[in-house]
Image (tube, rainbow, N blue to C red; front, side, top):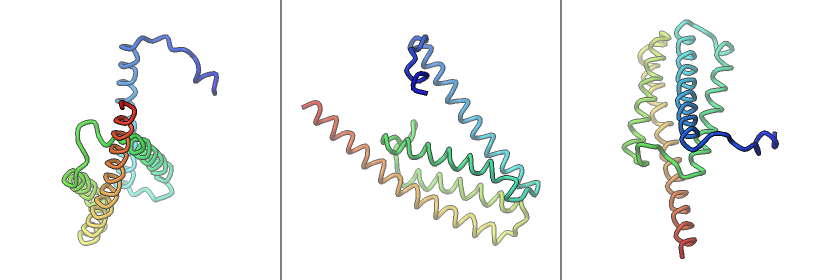
Length: 149
């Protein structure tokens, strides 16, 4: 594996940027389609055993990406960390869970309870993550200032 990682690239900077852009789009397309596949399977009545593989892949990739971004102090390419943004993302997640629960004929009350629980959990986790990312950004800024002195 080390031999593979140490190979010299034959691409120039423009080609590398284009390759990264293609990989970025491919990753998010694959991630979105995998999530859609799980939702469609749930609507068709698939059991937990049938969606376990896809759900594990989604969970592992999600956690790995969140950890990688947070360790580097990166929140999002288009937004800064904020409680308002966290509430919006949590509301979108809660809406998705509510719609899927209703689609699975779980009952309106149960779907609303699941949606509310999802909102609370997502909002809490995003706020904890936001605090960590802000702390990492401050640490990186302080380290940069020290290296300039």
